[in-house]
Structure formats: structure tokens, C-alpha cells
Image (cartoon, rainbow, N blue to C red):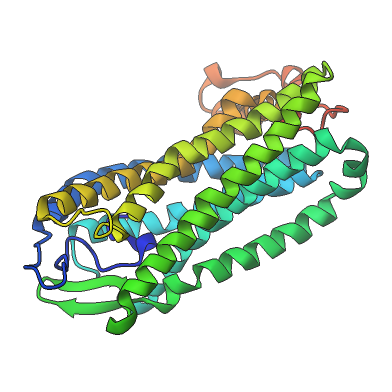
Length: 356
């Protein structure tokens, strides 16, 4: 977001950059940069993110009926993406104007942003472990990969994500400055640097390092197992989750690295106003890229999930085209033809590629 919600510092374009005893650097240029870049991009993300993830939820609930652990995790992943979408209109306005939404929404939306971030990566981890159990420990998976266990682990995951997001609610508040009201994180002056570094490290460890280690270990075992058997369904089942994992790191890793550099810039000898300005621009760009991630998963499902395409096609034929056919004959779809396009259950229902 244009207000650097996740990195827990004062806004780069509404406050001054503090270099200790040196002269502070004004953030006017970054403010203008954000005002031009963020609103149009956020608007597109809201449109595509809302539409795509709502369709994913619709398909999972209406057609899939949430009959597997995988379905439960994919549903929660879509909900995590929608959390980002919910907060974006507020941050888009804030990128251009002052914060006018009050302290309550400042705290809530900051927490919602972080909740979406942490829950998203946690559910991607669970999807990876779900694939690991289904392929590497297939016998044990028959008992463990149930809807009940999927629901239970999802509840625990949301609880952990909420705890990880608490600083976004505790530290963020509104404050009146010379340029107007801001929504940012404010710490006790004697603990400012400690909190900044701690929260940045926490975000990189929980959101990047640990997930990467888990996924590398899991997919190493998955690939070894798949090399020992030629099961096309299992290969397809891994493909979707593997793509989701790679896309996640492509979109989020640059931003995490940038905020790590930002909060440890003194140790890395980035102490000039020009260097700081370029780093904050990089944060704004990479953060905007990371926000686009909430639009990508539905696209992945559409291109990598054969059954998802069938469900989506069936939905548009039965719900959209049939209604438009009342007003425009070109949309008419024969009832028998529509019936033949409905989904069928298969033994591969539990596999991700078959599920979507």
C-alpha cells in the first residue's frame, strides 16, 4: 500500500526520513510518485481480485461442495485474497489525500492487510503439505486428509495469522501533522528501532524463509516419489500447487527484501537521501506488485485446473447465458446440451488438478 502498512514505520511521503544527527530528507517526491502510481493500479486490482476470487468461492461452494481438505484450503486462500481487496480502496484514496477515515479504520485496515498476508502464505503452506501427504504418505493421507481436519487446521491457521497481525492494530494510529492526518505506526521513541527491526525480521521469517524451507523440503520428497511412479493424475495434482507457490514468491519476495534493506539500511551503508528515496520508490513498486498477487490465483486455476474451467463454463452457461437468452437469442443454450456440460464426480476428485 502507499502507506507502507506492513513495514510498520511512518509514511515515507508524509513524514521526514530520520538519519539520527543528520538533516532529515523530505518525502515529497515519494508522495507524488505514489499518488500517480497507486490509485489506477489499485482500482484494477480491486475489480479483478474481487471478481476472480468471488468466482473461485462460488465454484468451490456451489459445484465442489467443499468435499475435500484441498477444497477447504483453497476456499480460505481465496478469502485471504479478498481481505487485500477489501482494504485497497481506502489505501488508494490515502495515496492521494490525507487519511480521513478515523483511527478505528486505520487500525482495522492495517490489521486486515497483515491478516491477508499471513493467512495467505499459511494456507499455501497447508496446500503444499496436503500435496505432500497425498503423494508421499498416501495411506496415512486417507485418514488425515478429511474435511473435518481441514476445517480444524484452518481455524488454527486463522488464529495464528490473527496473532501475527496484532502489531498492525496495536501500533497503527492516526496523527495530525503539518500535511494533514496520517495513518501509520508509532512506537515509543526509545523502542522505535528495536520494534522496526523485529517486525521486519518477523515478516521475512514467517512470510518468506520458513515457507520456502517447508516448500523446498516437501517438493523434494514429492518429486522423488513421482519419479518412482508414472501417475499422470498425481503429476497434474502437484502442478497447480507448485505454480501457486512459485507465483507467491515471485510477487512477494522482492517486497520483503526491499523492506529488509530499508530497515537495515544504516548497517548496509544506505545513508544518503538519494539512496533512501530510491529504496522507498522500490518499496512502493514492489508492494504494488505484491498486491496484484490477490488477482493471480483465480487466473492460475483457470489455466492450470481443467475441472475448474469446466465448472466455470457450466456456471456461465447455466446462470449467465440462460438469463441473457431471454433478451437475446444468441445466448440461447439448449437445455439438454447444458445438462451434458455439468460436472461429474471422479476418483480423482481429491486431487487438486481434478478439483480445479
